[in-house]
Length: 138
Image 1 (cartoon, rainbow, N blue to C red):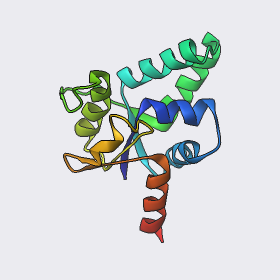
Image 2 (cartoon, rainbow, N blue to C red):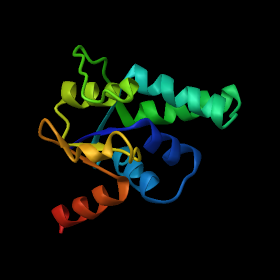
Image 3 (tube, rainbow, N blue to C red):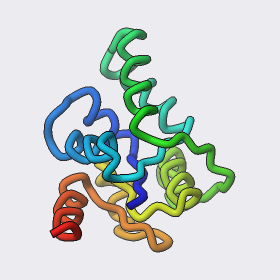
Image 4 (cartoon, rainbow, N blue to C red):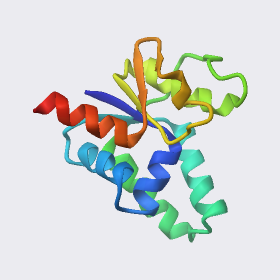
């Protein structure tokens, strides 16, 4: 199963372990999911950790490495305008399209989650994904 994490899921998973985002990230780290990340998402992650959460540079680097170890780095070649109200959210869509993801995992309930499904890619919260994933392996 191919998944793309929205930045907010990665922030929750690495900065605040425990809970559904951390659980889904753990599945990727264990190799049970094939997860992808782009340079744009990694840059946004570092910006949030460094700026909003005030993590030290060494912590930001360490958490970035953790994400890079769990995910395959891909530079999307396509550009999309799926979310007009917040264009930076399109970076997640571009990555998902590029890698032919099955799922986008997001905590962005305002712009990304309302898509529900986008070009055949299911858009779910971490909790929703875990519920669906569990039913698929039962």
